[in-house]
Image 1 (spheres, rainbow, N blue to C red):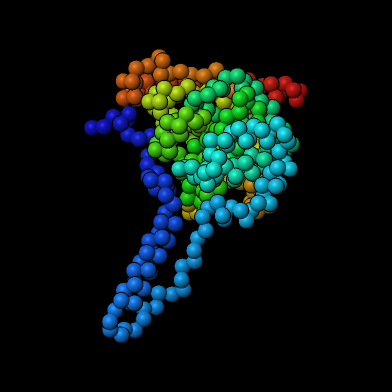
Image 2: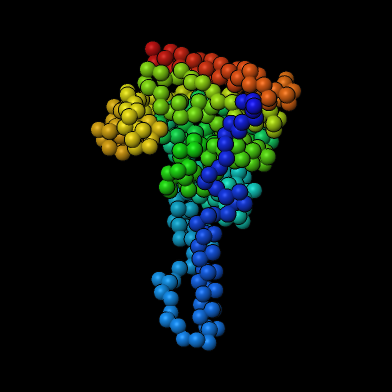
Length: 356
């Protein structure tokens, strides 16, 4: 009988190939090969046969970098949105990907630069983010950022990524682990991949940690995003996957509190039967959705406050045997949750005091 520690906490990745290839392009190339072989056989045949109708020829797919050239105006716009200091930071962040169309997990440096330019404006002017505790972030090497979650759309993750990129010294590139459901959404999954985020699987998580990346996780999972308004800032049960990988990779865990995200789209009611019917994790009723249609899901311009706390280094306190002890793993997860909850409570109290 397997113990809980033997079971993968994050599972396997159904959306990406293990060798880093793009399945669609692979299938396209295979069809071209079959077409070419069929045509050669026809030309070599000494008997007359009726030609096989294979339909219109498959169009050539230009290399990724050539396709990206057509969106050069986006690079110009990003240049206008980034001031000189931010431009230097973003250039330093993405230097390791220089000359690559994308890395093995799908990050494209040009798309990531554009995204940071856009979210930098939201960070400064829409959510007016205030942040502290950047000294708790490692200057180099890997780290896991464990944060509270909320707000339906993942602007909380985007603001943490942008904050560490534009305000930490030195700037660090944060790669967020997103919910599996996001990996099934057309266009959205491609966007997440291109800006450096990955579907939450064990293989993806390990790949990032082995590369000494800073990884953002929301241990509450979707339970955090679908909290009702009355449950705002009350953390839900933390998963164990990030604890397991922290121990395996000797990686520090930095607790992060985010104030504001859970106010950006307060859920008054979750229509669970309709959510199940539509295959959605939540069907929210908010003050603006579904009244205003899709626009009702857009976040309110609430002010964000992000705080980075003192890191946990469980790998220094526990032996590798703790990986097979579900009680030890639960203890560590609860310790991180307790710290994040304390930071959240302090941030909420401070905000109420400022509003008094």
